Image (cartoon, rainbow, N blue to C red; front, side, top):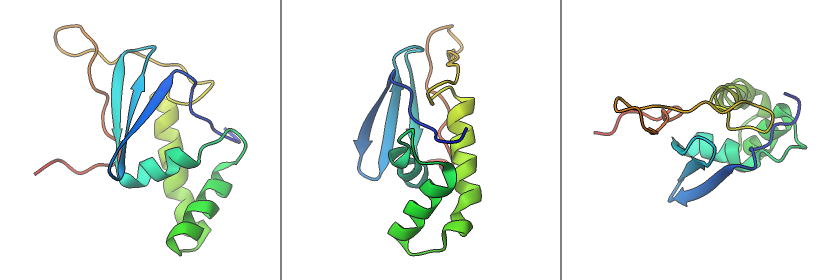
Length: 111
């Protein structure tokens, strides 16, 4: 995916440093940790992954090439979950057969 962009069906809400995404197609929720949230915010459908890594690196003061593997991994997870334009959304069912919260990307368990 050369220049990833969020799918139009995804709504984003911010809770402090984390983003919460709602997928209207599957009626599911994804909570992103602060790092994944930063990557998500930089996806514009024009900038490729290395450009996103460079922008993020500039913001936090590290070399862009150091962040590229993590940025690519986050974009890959977004694609796997159908959150990006051109990727398929699959419903996440809970044990009762209804919509469920999708897994959080890279977030440690709550204490």
